[in-house]
Length: 88
Image 1 (cartoon, rainbow, N blue to C red):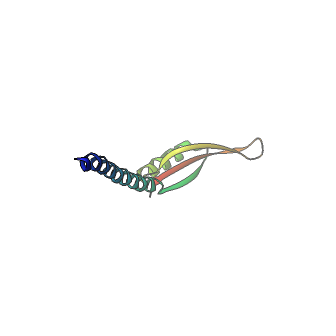
Image 2 (image 1 turned 90 degrees about the vertical axis):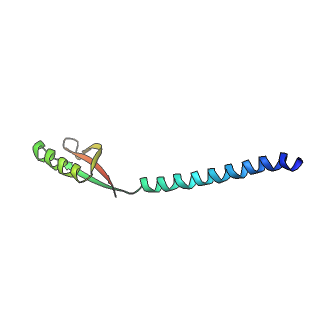
Image 3 (image 1 turned 180 degrees about the vertical axis):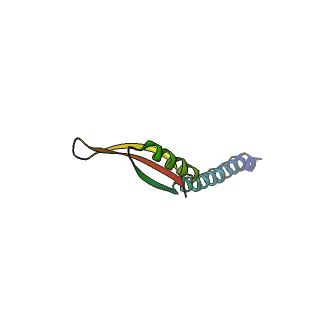
């Protein structure tokens, strides 16, 4: 009976270690899938109708807008930039 008292916790420990190891490998696979992305930067002009239709077309291709930036060039002028991404 002494062997059962020691072998049962050891067996539980080994099985737990196997499950933890398998879960870590699976989370590493998921993390590597998340990194596969394409990015695109689009300069936005004053013609909003043109950009609205362009964004609708890009959305149909799987692109999504994830950011916006305003670039200042010489203190008085600047450009608006949309940051897009999609899954590879």
